[in-house]
View (tube, rainbow, N blue to C red):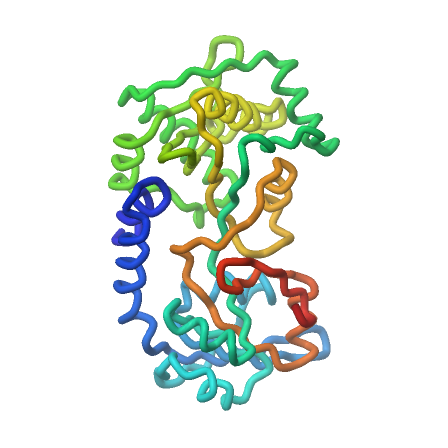
Length: 325
């Protein structure tokens, strides 16, 4: 709930630096030390000894993506998380520790990977979508043209309620199930106060929508949805229409840059492919938590070769696929 209060000022206001500093200051007490968990993972006839340090809710999604369902851990006493040299003495094939951003540079200098909890996708509106789109995107845009979608721009309270209850929530549940993230009522109020709603209709019925918040020459699209999460509407291009038509409106308003929000750091994520084909590029997310990772065995490297992941290096991102960057 505290982090959510910092989202809007970080991504769409002149208070970004202050919000980021507040986020890091508030995170520090939780990231000075962390609980230790050891798991022995079976990979066919081989095994991987994985050591985790820090909050399970942050490390778990990364470990699960690499290895599948995790066995129960052996728990140990908390350890300080500020010295990469001390933690490097721990015996394990793979060490994953939650690390504060102020400590992260020393871990990187010591050879650890820095895996963020998420990455953002941004681009230049002059090249989003590309002037020469791939075949998949050409097909998507053709659906938008052929089906005759229309768009309206509104800020009415009743329209926001329809957007959340009929589009955002159903699609999130259809895509992610019980693990779906939903904006809290507090965040919803912030978005409504600062944003504009873009609702797409087909044959006179509203079928999809997205919302935007602009600051300077940057426009951010934080939330979108398709009515009732209906797959047939998605196949007809309703979700694509919401993005394509809202981008056209953004260009007409003089915006030059787009921020299309956050995804997981894993390269094989289908949403990565979707955003790349629109001409967007991944960039570090200043509010994403970091995991410092030390890979020590061929078995652990093999997991990353199957599931390549983006890693932070200062203000840039690279890809780790089980071999040197």
